[in-house]
Every structure is written in C-alpha cells, then in structure tokens.
Image (cartoon, rainbow, N blue to C red; front, side):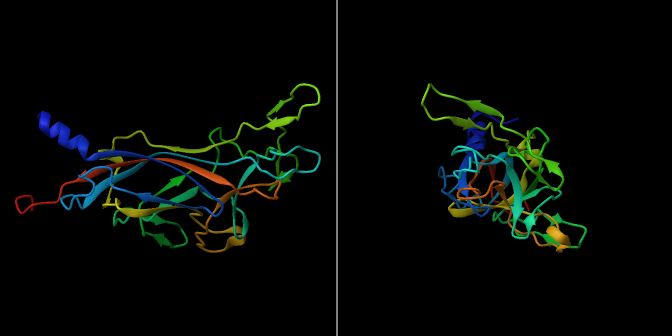
Length: 242
C-alpha cells in the first residue's frame, strides 16, 4: 500500500508517449527527449517498456490509374525487396536495448537486438484490402468503397475508407512490459520487417516491409504509423536491495 508521496513518485516514473511518423522505406525515426527530471536522472537506468497501441496504413496514392481520378488507388499490400510478402506477421522492431526480448523462427534465426513485437499482417477487419480491380496471389481486388460527386462541373472525388493494420495490448505494463535500458535522450528507431523467410523461400531475410499501393506510380509507398508507447522507470538497485 503506497502513501500519497509514493503514489506521486510512482506516476512521475510512468510515461505514455504518442508517436506519429511517415516513411517510404519502413524505417521511422523519433528523437525521444526526456519529458521530466525522472526520465533524465541517473537514478533510473532501466525501465519497463510496452507498445500498447500501434496502427499502420498507406496513405492515398497520388498517382492516377487509368480511367480514374487523382487520389484514388488505396489498395495496400505488404511488399519487400523481393516482392509481395505473405508472412506470419509483421515484425515491429526497435533499437531500445534489452536482453529480455527475443524473436525466433523455425529456420533457426534469432533476433535479439531490441524490444520488438509481432503484429498481424491482416488489416483490422481480417481482410486483404485490394481496393482496385485485378488479382494478386489469387485474391481478387475490390471496388471503390465510397464515391463522392460534387455539383455540376465540379471535380469528382474518389474517397477510400482506408484499411488499418492494428496492434493492441491492454495489459498493465507491470504484467506485459519488458525490462529495457533507459531509452530517453536517444534516437528511437522503429522498423517494419519480415519475421521469417522472404518470397521464393529466401531464408531468414528479415527484410524491411512497406505497404505499397498495387496501382503503382508516384506516391505508391507513403506509409504512416501511430504508436502508443508506455514506459515505467525502475529505480536503480541499492546495496540493501541486492
């Protein structure tokens, strides 16, 4: 049972960081500045870290596929260097140092460079959203989800209700957090990677993945990410604690 001062001290050590960024290569960079004196103190060299929410999507293509107006073509597919990826998930990796977060696959490869999670490679409604016609990997494309027409002689606007890839963890950080080094005052790098083999059986590539519009053209890769990162600073141990 904590007293009032201990309650205040505890919540000064607990942070919720909201990150948002854009990328065309699957790499997102943030400068994680200390939000208060606790995060910048030498008395807290370790912490618990948890990604509690994450979403990814590809913004509308700025190219104009044949017969359609600008701004159409919102049809996302995970793509790597080797081509289309149908993986067991998307490996969200970070450079937050830890010895307690590992990723293994059945090819015998292990990733342990930093805190990471696996996110499903299906969008939030469980489908692959190929919004334009045609088929990829045997999956038939879908049509426009919404169409708006303005007054006479006004520009027509095709509106896509974009699919979003989501990850959510509602557990308390004390239960779900991973012990890591203090990430504040450093550049935070987040990447979207393949957790397993690449296209054609390439072994353990771990290659960077992006959401790419199948219509191609300018702006076909214009990914955005949103992350809710929870951090709980842990006091350094003292001789009495050991």
